Length: 392
Length: 88
Image (cartoon, rainbow over all chains, first blue to last red; front, side, top):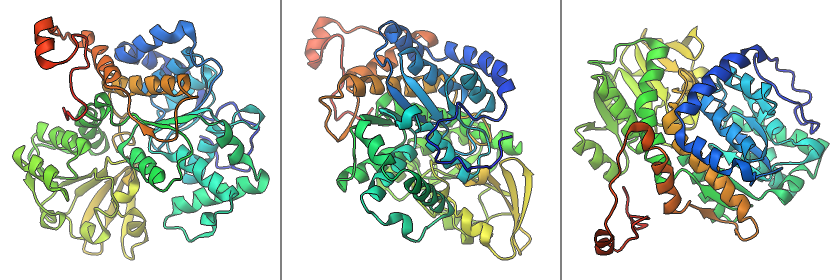
């Protein structure tokens, strides 16, 4: 596994790649070959445009889960002529054999499963560091982390004091430290990057929300394409993707029998709709929490009981958050949950569940069962399981 | 957790998302000199095209509008078929 030596964290002399184990490349390639057969739309676009190389020499940074499917996207961008660098947009989401195959194909990729937050942001910065101190001309973003880093960097160079303000989370502190270090070494780094940056395409509800907030404040630096709100994205990936992958994740993590359990889905947007259907499909009794009367009415008319989270405590066996908001499941909620409840998040960020306060709670015992599965036992003797440390 | 504990969404559905990503990147670059700072959505025609590219794989036989039907709806036979405010 890669070590956490990050002295070169702001080194603009780009490294070629950093992955967990390059020897996994052959396995990755075999699975990429299979995925290509299941990705007809992407492959059709690759075949249509590859000959004309419309992105010849264009520097593209991607920050998107480094999976087998993403490998097919990366190789499509390369086939269109782009000069691509890649990082994952989640510390746990990389499939190491996919990253290895992409590295072996000569694309600089910085991603492995189980990064620390320091490593994660180091990887993001590496993906942004093209040879000769250059940055990307285009960005493919998922959640908006690359867009955030460039914007915060530019603001810092213009005299903004955000990096010196108190941090609301450990991750915020990590970002600030990275920006301070970059600034010390190259005080005009982000201004130089921004000069040649021509646009970003963003594919998550959360990332798009961030973009609109930046636009409203007059802070957005480049044109952005909201890919999330293509109908063929949000009404498919968010809905049918989650309908299959939610229970897949719960099953692989816990092997729990879903049939007969009470599942609580917090948020009934596209992801919530897919998640609720996923759990109902295996025979769970699904309850939904909502703040929006329209979505609440949709859930109720689909046959789900809609109630508050407080009402579900002591009843719910499986909790899933997908609201895009913070503090949905609090430490107080978790203390009152049924013994052996499973708690997980399929929304973009890990702040839907109060993880930092849970980890800091006096008297709680944390027992790691296996990677991405932790058992927390409260003073009452009740235990709950948290999947992927509350991350997507 | 679907990515942390399992392997995320299956390829077929991600082909839709990534087809949109690729078309967005092509569009941003092709029109880089005319795009102004702002947030844009891909044209409905391309959205329909992404869907169209996935039909054959799962055995969908699409019905084609007759000219009379297209005129009745006030759309072109080739699409786009829905108004911008339509919510699917």
